[in-house]
Image (cartoon, rainbow, N blue to C red; front, top):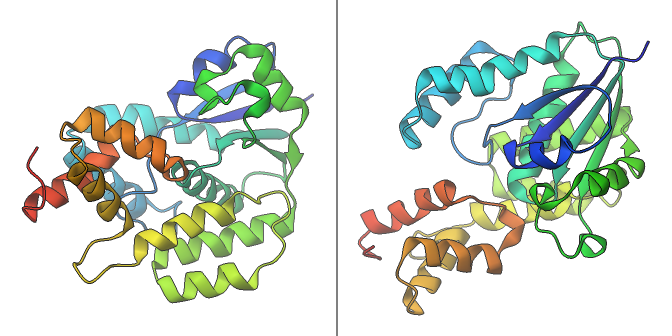
Amino acid sequence: MENILHILNGDAALHGFNQTGLDGDVMVWREVLSEGPLQENISSGSFWNARAKWITKTFDEDPEAYQHKVIDELGKLNEHYTEINLWFEFDLHCQVNLLGVLKMLTQKTDMSAPAIYLICLADCIEFENAKGLGELNGEQFEELYDGRERLNEWEFELASEAWQLYVDGDAAELEQWINENSFWGGVPLIKPALQAHLKRLQINADGLNYIEQTLLGIYNSGIKSRPAIHAAFWQAEPIFGMGDKELDIYLNSLGKKQLIDI
């Protein structure tokens, strides 16, 4: 008997997914691993304690809400599934979360090698240029599902290397690794996402990373309100996949440096 799990990257995808006729349990991944402290061992208690402290402080989140929305959901990975479907998008936010999920799956010794498939919204043209899974209906979800790709051991190894390099945060090592890998198999979207992250790691003479430079440029162009800055950044740099709260981390940093006043 098949026991199926679908892992969705964020609540936005839930509405459309619930319109499908796809069987299986659903787990919503609600973390933002593209920001904040990370450790190599994503399955450790210290990893999630550090995440909980950072999330609750940075986003003024209630600790009990984090426990319920994030930690309790992770418990579903302890169940025995014969098939796991990963629903993730092309941007840095989603791809780093995907790396974290893949790392967790490799560390689950109680999982007897389920078939793991990746469903990724990359080429959105056939879906009227939808920006994300949250804009798709059930029929479009099922169309994506039909094109899913099963991941193998090689791709898990590649993702594990990428996770380690991402956690380490060494720009030179990451750049060398990206350049040395010419084949990306079923996870080709890791490359452009990590190239975007590489730009974020590189600091200019003024001590600003790429995201801060871009936000400052938007501000200096005459766009002065947070919602308008958010919208301009999203339009210019969709590869980062950042929500308003994540962008505010960088805007607040620019404010502390007295480079912007909003």
